[in-house]
Image (cartoon, rainbow, N blue to C red; front, side):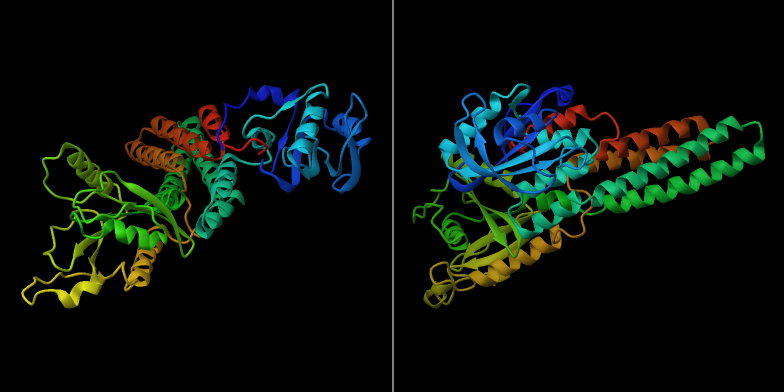
Length: 453
């Protein structure tokens, strides 16, 4: 999905770009996208003419230089501005064999004014052409990357404009408050007028600050859903962490050994639990050790625990429970439940939330259900989060703080300073939709897209 940085956006006015929009492996059909001012020339050169707009037409594709038939394809034409990019655009639905794709792409490269697209360049043109705002572009990127239903649901809400519309409404109202403050400054010699508009601006700033604060008070649900809910399996050596990891992943991902301290590095597995993305991490057993490599593994375990959303703390049934991890939410699980009958009568009890046996499968479904419930409480189901990226949170926090400073300045009688803070708030919110300069964001975002998207 990654590639080189996107080209200078000024090339959008001169170059016609093309790229496969479907996967590169062998397939029945490969869709090749074309966008730019030479799109009609491409269709005339390869397909013998331009089909009716937005209608699929069966055409022989020919090499412009030799007239050789390259493929029989379905061809579609989308005239500007009614296309994804807002430019003239075409799609060539060719057969998906490597030789056919290569021949068609080579033919396109020989049409004057055409070149291969850079990663994300089609979507960048859609943004620059006003077809999408920046938050919708990010939603599209998330939709392409979505691994679970909850991630898909959240990304689709953002692509459809959930965050963009809200941000634009906030920005419009902030600008209105700014206009009121500017009016107060213009009519400062007329006390009644100035007091009236300042009071209106203060009320608007208070309401906006409250709405933005509520959007921020979501414990990072949107970001955590995008990244995945992180669960760390932790406990003393030989607590059954690696065996349980294999049982939860339903495949052998971790080496299991009766020798204590054999797990040295963290092993990660991505799971889909009820449509929620969960990253499960097996870690080294926690104990004091003089072994340098094992000590490094223990240090990494503690770092993983500190960054986890949930620690599944494992204890064998035949040993007292070590101290539970502090600060991080945890689920205490007693392992090796199948061996409980063989325990000595004097064995100390383990107070656990659940008992499991990786050998027999006992308690595994209950543990997965418990992890899913904790994850759902934390990240939701993708239907309600407003903020989905750290960039959004920083922008809204900046706007909230600026509005709060502006309100204090206005209360202190400094209308000019309040107006400047409100202007800063409008600019911060504008970065969410891309209404202000966000070139650094654009380069990083579009460079991570697929070529052809």
